[in-house]
Image (cartoon, rainbow, N blue to C red; front, top):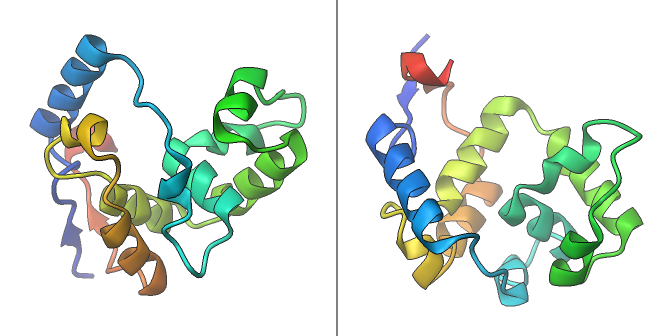
Amino acid sequence: MERTPLGGWGTAGTVRRFVDVLAERGPVTWRPEWAASFPYLPAETATVLLTGATYCAAADEVTVPPSYLEVTGLSAPAARTASDAIAALPKGRLLHLLNAAMPLEPAALWESGPDTARLASAWSEPSPTPYEFQPWLE
């Protein structure tokens, strides 16, 4: 089976650059307008996808942190429901969407946010053939 190379965020160099910028700048400040950029995706689901909060679906005993709810404006049930929906996506599909959301230059995430146009396009199209993972990502 042919595999699509995982571009941009699929390289060790890009991930290291992201970690370096994260250590330097701290967490990215959430902006609700990012979630509003998707006409066919509920804002709650877009928020969970863009914030990576799929951990809410990891176990029933996980409590959504109040700070997350405050920053995103979601209720705990809405965060849980949206997280369950995102976590139910096939892993390859989720990876494709997250890769589409990340700007090619990691520092741009702090300056202009995720690439919402590319993510919206990726959401409305089928995922490509399975990604070719770098050995360190498997």
